[in-house]
View 1: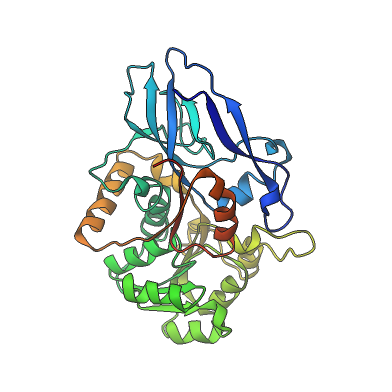
View 2 (view 1 turned 60 degrees about the vertical axis):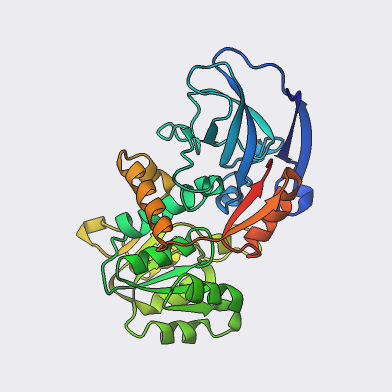
Length: 352
């Protein structure tokens, strides 16, 4: 049995864009597990932008294991709820081993217990992506928050990323027109040629506003927000009356410092007079939402997972993953993901 665990901790708070110097790999003794516990070996680790905005700005997290969703294999169990060989979808962070209990939860949310991965749904890696948090997020934001309708125009930023690639395809499945915004011709080509988007705008080409106007001649009914910044500025003039903006994230703002900080995107939306979704009886406007919106509702969450899995098996829903190997690759892969180097869902294959 292993006696040592390697983990990635925050060595110091990042200033602006994180650097490798902000992270440190440390080793610690595992010790023996007790009754009611299980020893877990991390197989897969997900890297997501929210880690930069939620975990890394806080001084009290210096020296702590970086947070993150995981798929782990039970190596040894001293609980009747889990057996050796079971795969656990959990929230054990950037480390090779962890000690868990059946009462552990995902995403620090008491309403989302750890789950046993059902391999019949899809490949193990998808438990952290298209059949996990990011797939759920796309499903929740487009179908339950924005309530997409056939014939509408849906624009999604970070379109080739983990959430964006699912949003565009769900729009097409539900009879809407899907327009992506992504960085570079390769990513835009993937969205159109592989995923079936109607159009994709390369924001790096330097003609964002004009290209977006050309791709949305009838305006925008739903803007699925992942980015903020200049992309949001280009979208706002194209919004139709009654448009909805489900807000997943603002990745363009996560690395800002006091010297580079721009207007908060929510303040920008408020300046345009857009109310919160459902506020004052209005159906137009914006709303923050998250993975927990859907994951806390049962059996809707299980049904969503089965539906997404069925669409993958039928070929209606495709996905791409950006995978690196070994815990030592996590920091560089995370930094690259924040800079748009990833293509699809960013994952680390920690162990086999």
